Length: 86
Image (cartoon, helix red, strand yellow):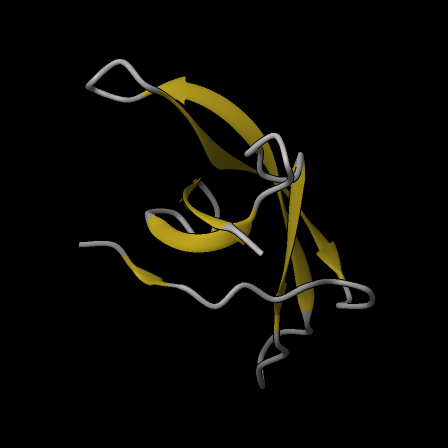
């Protein structure tokens, strides 16, 4: 399966870049759900990011995910493993 490196904007994943699977049209899914495990001081939650199109400095069209909301619980969510960018 092909993957695209996509930037996350806003929320707890701000500035991170993750490899996200793309469909046959080379588009990333319209919504990305990321699970944040529970810690001692807070319950588990699901972060919801929505796809947004933007133009890079070289004029090419690209996709990024913008933070939409946080939901309580982690049922049915997919985790994204990413590292901070640069």
